[in-house]
Length: 217
Image (tube, rainbow, N blue to C red):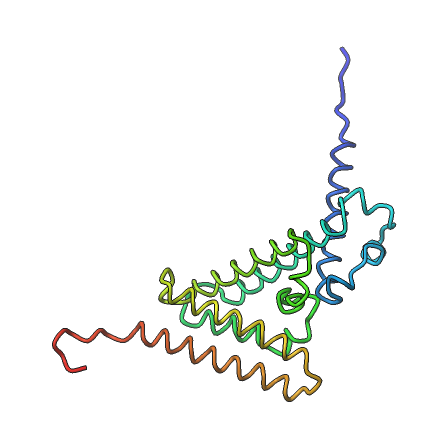
């Protein structure tokens, strides 16, 4: 009786290729935030990943395809960090998220930070698949912020989340752009103060008891 042994080599090769692919994407996700889309070249990414330039097309059809995957990886990491900072729906969840986002540590952690702040000005000139990734991430972040509101599900919560998101990203971009540390910190603090007051007023209004009909206003 002959016992036929199954060859596990194809599975091992597939797993190795997948791990290599993930390594390239992770390197590219950091690089695009650090250097921008325009400053991220295939040769540099492959070198940093410990691979030859020629191996690139075994993993991607084009540079744009790699950038789209890198952007998706960066956005997924950013969403996970924001969700972790929020820690769940509570009156303090959004305040915690805002403090983490509008922090000196985030300003200095460009290659691991928010891809919207790092790449927003370049995104309109990218391929459609890259812009689609950015659009999806903005929607996810707006929804995450809106879920922290006691008015979640209502138009007001969505609108406030849009304003909050725009203020967060804008403040971070400006805080990184200026060459005066004091001004950078002031931009972060002013945005954090404004958004915290906005959040607190929303929670206070929701918690206030309704005025009975006919009672003095």
